[in-house]
Image 1 (cartoon, rainbow, N blue to C red):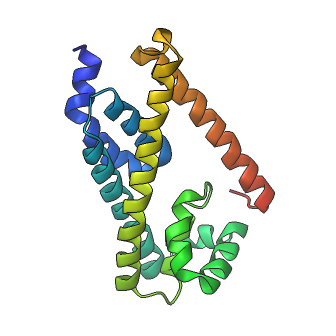
Image 2 (cartoon, rainbow, N blue to C red):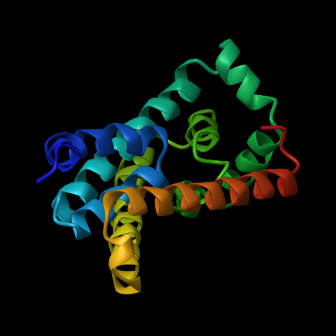
Length: 189
């Protein structure tokens, strides 16, 4: 086992736990890819991702709930996406809690916006936990299946460096899609 693989095996789940709350899909999909390679257990990747996502969203929710007049939350409230998020939450509160983590560009602002609404903290926590589990399982599975597809393409894609290149390409594509979605929504960031 190479030094990099050893580091991934030892610290990968911690990185996924932290990264799921900060970066999200890219980190969790990469965890699924590493699970396919046998470096991490897939259930562990899913659990770490769910816990990280749940925790980050709880923090952002309570930031919106208890610090709505702070400079950080006030800046978020000035975004066009914030107003659209509030309107959507008012119409579909349960559906939105499940859906926002799948919508690029709304990942951070959504739990803050939810914190400024009338949705109860307990209700949000339960819905957030269920949604985080579904999200973690889906994204880790996509990474796992994507790895299998790469493996089927041939031996030249079996090295970690090639996987990393594929992940970077995927991240660029997802980032471009997020930018286009934000631009289409008319949000300033």
